[in-house]
Length: 368
Image 1: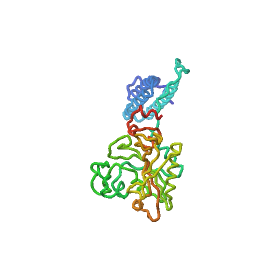
Image 2: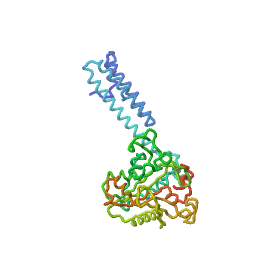
Image 3: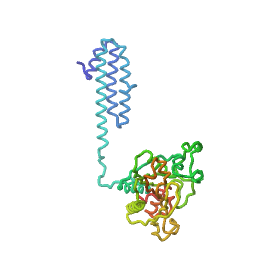
Image 4: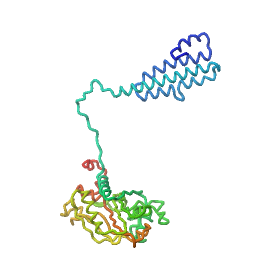
């Protein structure tokens, strides 16, 4: 059987006749030497891939030679086909071997490389302090059996206001407070879309799609059309927690909240609850924590009163429970909506919330 190495002998036998078979064999022999040289000369993986494409690709040299097969006599085609397959296999093996050689060469340590010289550490990143606080709260609530829930940033008037017991004339529905989406700011309440002004509407969605009792938290970014200052931003983070069951003691909700805050801050955190009105809770409370920036002495963050409002809270309003498909005579609960940004201010003693959203690396690098 003729082997690839016998090309030259075979070609010499046919040198006296300029047949189509002789021409094809001559091209194969030339391609053999040319291909070997190109493969062995490839110095990078990219160059090797280019050589492979030029030899074996759809537009490669071997493919072009195979297009001449129909010109051959039928009796000559099997032998030429065998030689073509042998050449293809030889090129494939050579390419694989050269690729392995390139990998080994790349891993070699240069002779002039000094392994005793200390290396340079690459620049490392870190979690944003608000993200880290969110993760810490997640861990604290998970340890008490809470589920983590997330939703899209765009919601409808139906869930942002109607299902939360907001009156039709409530000022929060106006564009001076809420960012309505252009082109989706008219029509029925389920058609009017906005950037979510709070997370509570998502809680109703959760209750509609899950079976009670509920014990979940809901972190996310919210958007308000308001003037920014040291305590307020237009886009900021909230962290909502909700328990709904048949027998929930309101006092136990306060204990839960103190436990979570103490775990996050690593020390006892003073908490107080003041009567407050929110359409989605009844009764409702303003929940404050002692200002950790000034230690309760008074500063610009707490407006010199020693306390800072961090969340509304209370028992879900009966109309909210009804909107979620629950009987308010059977179920009750405890709800809080934590101002995540303000908790981070307390943790690090920062007196301006806008710094966290400034993307100023000089400020953020201190939290690595």
